[in-house]
Amino acid sequence: MSLPTRQIGGHKAAINNPKVSEEAKEHSRQAIEELEDDPETQETRAGYEEDKDEVRQNAGYKATLKNPNVSQEAKEHAKEILEERDAF
Image (cartoon, rainbow, N blue to C red; front, side, top):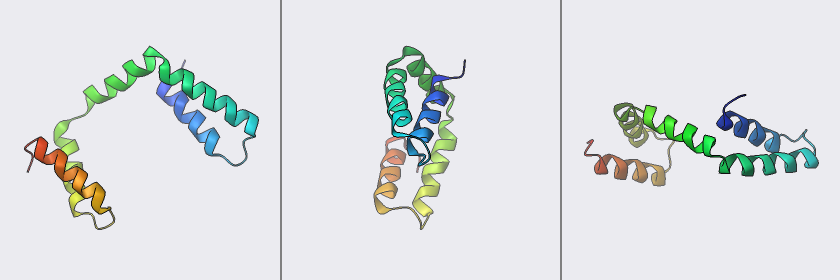
């Protein structure tokens, strides 16, 4: 069976697809709700967090600060995180 996070992604795609019936969209909403409560989903997400390299994350936040296409709010958020991590 596929990862619950992948299943959630598929259901989200169905919800946003205009060719999918309302009945199927409702089924996907219910499935997402059930999957979100599943302990396996939480474990999978925790594993994703453990695998993230803080150096690469910081590089992404620094890139956000210099990107002219990013909102001021996002830049402020990135700056706050970098300050918390003493990554400047």
